[in-house]
Length: 358
Ligand SMILES: NC(=O)c1ccc[n+]([C@@H]2O[C@H](COP(=O)([O-])OP(=O)(O)OC[C@H]3O[C@@H](n4cnc5c(N)ncnc54)[C@H](O)[C@@H]3O)[C@@H](O)[C@H]2O)c1
Image (cartoon, rainbow, N blue to C red; front, side, top):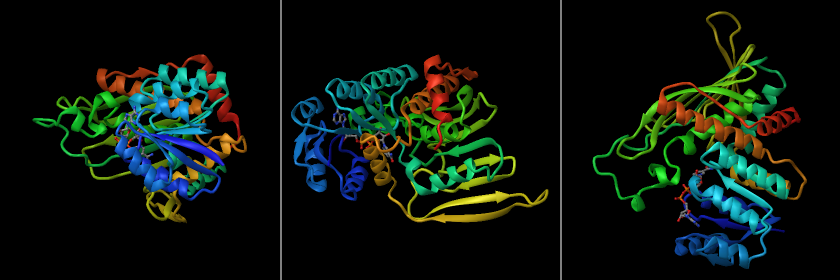
């Protein structure tokens, strides 16, 4: 039985609590939140015995096999470092891993040195619709991949506010000090998918978008990512549009389209589109049964912790993607193309990971 602790018992923690209840060989034994009542509620709902409002105390008092971090992106780097120093050897960290490439690289070095498993929580990668997409692409069904288009947007209220609520009353998504805005919350999915299907190191990005002056966070981000193998990623993430989570991978012999890619509710769909002749497009739909992606993710995490499986989202990939997100933010700010400067050891480790079979 894998004994886990959770740090951060807010919105997404419920999905992890429900997921754990479906898995026999792991359970959350301890819950921590700076809002003690939130930790107590979560523990009562999902069956954890111990409640804490200081995660360092939790790490000292409990013999944990692993920790799930469900706190804000600005906290992940420090919390991962503290967990590793306390001897925790398995960490599932909600996206986004960290807020700069350098911070992500530090985590990677620490994890390599201690032999720890650190996995970024991109639950969508564990959904069978995305696994099906991978199989079709890597089996060559659409030929050579040329570009990936990935989008995550929804209407999150006005882009500017005359009188924004005080920071402590604001959702973290509208707080720059917590890592809010679309880059580390929503665009990160699109960057992750583009990188995963491009299968090469990124080299340069170009971005535009909107920084909300009153809120201090990027509310719209649109970007191009060039990869070293010539594939292009086209990402779009906006709080100024209706809900969209589209993913499309375009190849020389067809396109694969996922209408809802990141938080699939109910059955998943992958649409295979081919142009039999100029001016015509034919589509074949593949439906995939409804699946709890968070449970699938926890199963993979547990199997990786037991060294029975590789993590579906390798840490080095998350490090590379963090560099891309940081470059997109810089490009949006400067309105200039920005080179993605990966440390050589990170690029080499990522290339090695890409060579491994899925
Ligand atoms: N995978 C997904 O589907 C998904 C969806 C939403 C959010 N997320 C990610 O999950 C993370 C949390 O997002 P959320 O929407 O649940 O945020 P939230 O604000 O609802 O919850 C965060 C919780 O962390 C607690 N917290 C803050 N500092 C803490 C500390 N030092 N120690 C312990 N607890 C602390 C807060 O009190 C709060 O309860 C973010 O990284 C976000 O990107 C993932």
